[in-house]
Amino acid sequence: MHYVVITRSDSTPDGDLGHYLANVGATMEPYGGCLLAFDAPQRLEGAGGFTRTAVLEFPTGEAARGWYSSAAYQEIAAWRIATMGRQVDINLVSGVPA
Image (cartoon, rainbow, N blue to C red):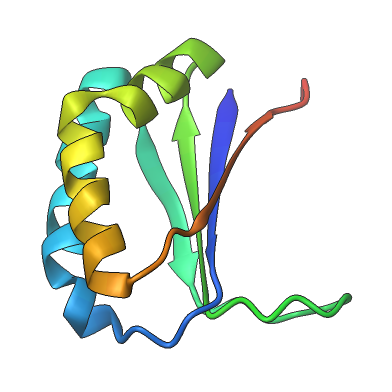
């Protein structure tokens, strides 16, 4: 499995991102992606000031990159960036064998 970790460090209310949050799941479906977690993180160590973190799961790195670069996601991401006035941090990591 491969995981996309999205972190935000802004003060945009989730309500202002309703369009993005309501539609992003549909952009992942063709790539086998699903949302595993979304919440305000509880910091255990470090100085990161994240306000929200999301973890998405994809079957392969290619699927995750395909989702991210898809026209459907890029359209909704452009809306999110315009609404927030900034980008978020999005990282792809590989899972480890069980």
